[in-house]
Image (cartoon, rainbow, N blue to C red):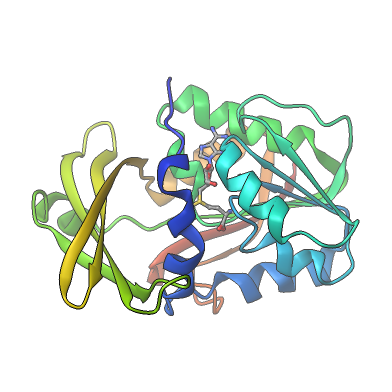
Amino acid sequence: MEVKDYGDVAHYYDPAYAAKTDLQDVSFYVKQAKKYGGPVLEIACGTGRVLLEIAKLGLETTGVDFCEKFLEILRNKTQGENVSLHHADMRDFSLEKKFALVTIPFRPLQHMYTFEDQVKALTCARNHMADDGVLVFDVFYPLWHKILEDVNTEQLELEWQDPKNPQRTIKRSFIRTEANPFYQFFCGEFIFRTFENDQMIQEERSKLKMSFYTYPQMQALIKCCGFEIMEEYGSFDETPIADGPEMIFVVKKA
Ligand SMILES: C[S@@+](CC[C@H](N)C(=O)[O-])C[C@H]1O[C@@H](n2cnc3c(N)ncnc32)[C@H](O)[C@@H]1O
């Protein structure tokens, strides 16, 4: 299935997620890297929000993403020699190398919309794991009522100052345009509005499609792809998985 990359608004990624103070995943992934060691592969690494923090530990770190714009931003932030980057689709790549730790942080598996693509992505991750390697990834726990109820209601999510021009504020809203509970996906649009002295001077939109998973579905997918669950959490503070709001899995080869 065709998937869209988000390169058109890639320049907003770092400032937006720096403003998202409730996103506490980086220290969790850094902890996994300290525990399992390198080399580390991050699949769908984006602009390196997580990858660069792991590279700072001195571990050999590899990133893969299919969005060249994200990789370009990441390359410009890279200093050390211990980071290598590859432009590839997470469903189909081969690095001819095995990793002690493979990660897929911040929901890239929710960009896999069909069972076939989900299996391809997890199988590809597995193919890059050392025999005793570990895969860590997260998806969100779907609040069905919220996903279904708020269609066509624009929500202001994040707001930050333009790092290049402090007179400007950027506000990111999200509007869900479709929610499909049968096929378990929703579509929507991020709306980025730039304000200068309270006047809107620019509006940019970027479409988003995300799948979502139930817990039993995740268990079946993990098993079907040849993994065994070692640990599972409902938050990056390692609370029980049934408490949500995330579904975080640490798995090994079965
Ligand atoms: C929410 S971002 C997460 C980025 C990064 N892991 C982080 O934690 O900030 C989702 C990432 O998945 C990537 N992505 C989506 N579909 C992909 C695919 N088919 N192959 C490779 N990367 C993909 C996007 O380009 C984007 O960088």
